[in-house]
Image (tube, rainbow, N blue to C red; front, side):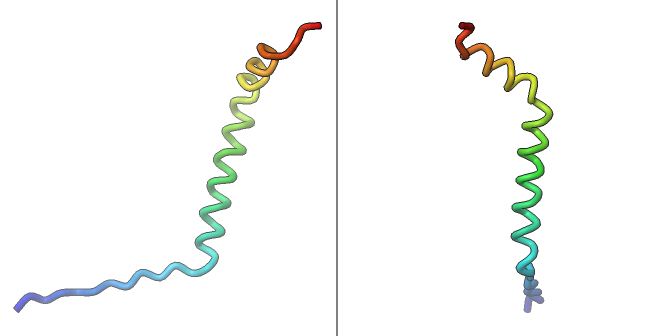
Length: 49
């Protein structure tokens, strides 16, 4: 007879908010890191009037 163990994982409600916070921090950090590239692309497509 095989001994089968069942594991129950529990994630409290704050875990979902933590994931959203990590994603937001990643994208905002990347935006600030690549700010010069974004500015260069914006200037590339803007009118030089």
